[in-house]
Image (cartoon, rainbow, N blue to C red; front, side, top):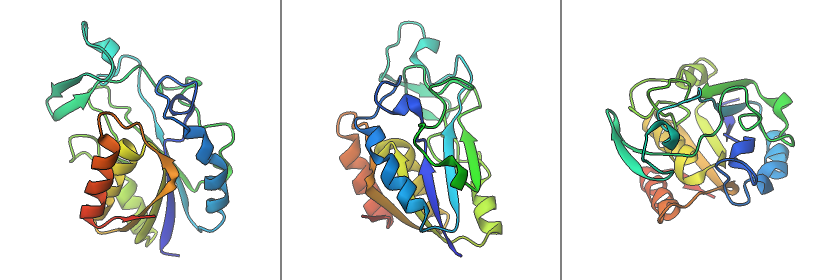
Length: 198
């Protein structure tokens, strides 16, 4: 077994009705559950922010959601408060088959830095530990699904490719936010990096 399915941030706050809803984010759940059955290894990631996280617009007086500010590690989109630790919004979508997960990786819990990627925080150097886990299991190929295509899926795919994994993103089982063309830009960046887009 050298391949794994990485299900990214399929949480209530990213689904319709959530604080940072991705259009049709809930429409991919059943397809992802079915796909799990074809993989020997399944990993779920979970955005897991403390209250007052630095990526929240509410933490910056006078700023609004979706504005971009400069952080010590570079540009940061400011988001509505979302996926706060222990909240219903941070929970996985109720329809997701979480019992198939070998590993649930929580990210974004450092209050000073956001973490889109499943591999690194947004400074691009602080690891989450996922790479070491995959290495010890001998996994070389990753198929990625989930939310959102143009942020957490994109960053995870680019980092995985940079680390030497063969990466496939199932566009039919991912959905994007698409802020000002971010979806097309993300897909172009992934394709240029050698990610297989299906």
